[in-house]
Length: 303
Picture (cartoon, one colour):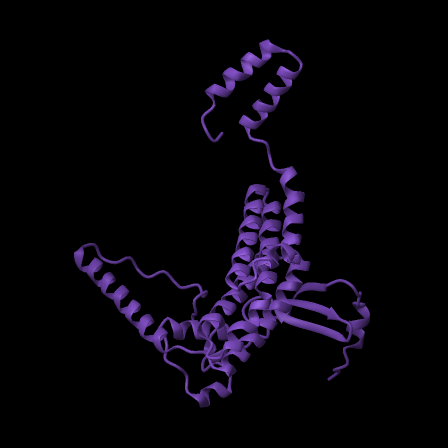
């Protein structure tokens, strides 16, 4: 078996100063993200965990810890933690896994009472699990290593303009930050990832805005950028560094994108009439101005 990848690398030369990425399909029909680096080639699954592992049978280690936090499973014994291979080929369903729809319940008060009872049981299970839930330094280290894989993938997907996948992976990594910030045993583990929060928020907003532009939903793009800047501002205020907001490179990039996007926003009918009215007044075309005033009065608010 030939294991030398030199021919592959020659067919795809490395180009410094940019993300060299491509999307391919393997022999089984699964999509893979490839990244050409200076010393070789990275390949990641386009779906699920980038390395294809299923920690404890879950799609990711994050989903495993979230399931524990939700009271869905008990803690796995230490000897089980030695392997990340699943006990069965079917991954277990975590928070983001798509669940099949249950059959419709029979009509009547008994079904409603049963649903309420199950809701109460789930809440009790979560409260009990959350009271005892802590992330050890080893847990946090493993989560950071996993998050680094998703970082590699979403940077490549951003270059490929696979914006939905960027949104998915950045949203997922923000959940890692939230989980560690709230449940890590050690202060250092609670804080070490926070230095990346503004960056992840910024990348996610860029992907949201870019997708909105592709969908010709420019207002949604501006809204995504504004919400991201608000989130970054709250982050710096929460961490006691409010002045860091104005100096943030992430905020500068978001503002720059917004400034480029705002002039492209469609003008509402009311704004257009106002502009025409002002031009009519400026040119002393008072007859037209009177007509435009009447039209403005007839328009409903918000048009």
